[in-house]
Image (cartoon, rainbow, N blue to C red; front, side, top):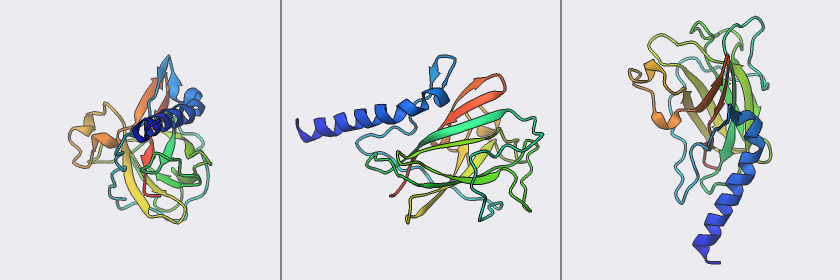
Length: 196
């Protein structure tokens, strides 16, 4: 088997193996959410964006940001953290924060703020709500992603088909999550390619 065939076979195997655990998370009404971005010969690293004015360090470790009494639609966000060589980044730190359903950030505590770690296969999972729209911005979620001992990627995640995407100067199509909706539940997927 030549080098190109070997790389292609490895990518197919890795993609199939890593996608299996997400069948229940990324599969709604017969729709499977694809890998984003796809690893290729020259995978693009996930673009960085500003943290904005509302980042708070030392968020609690928790895989659910859902607050008691929230009536907002629920969001399950899952995906992979990968190196530019399409290898899983084990134990990557993912620190998430976003506004509440009214578009307000908690700047005194840790409502809708928290961090998780990717597992040994680079998989992560977070339960939260669909955030409201912050004035002047489209609906989005902030995240910092870091391989153990690596550089921090700070970026933002966007929802597809939001009217505000067209008018928000910060919106980037390549940071749009794959989202499947069923009633008040949304299942989203986005994969990060970072320096590892």
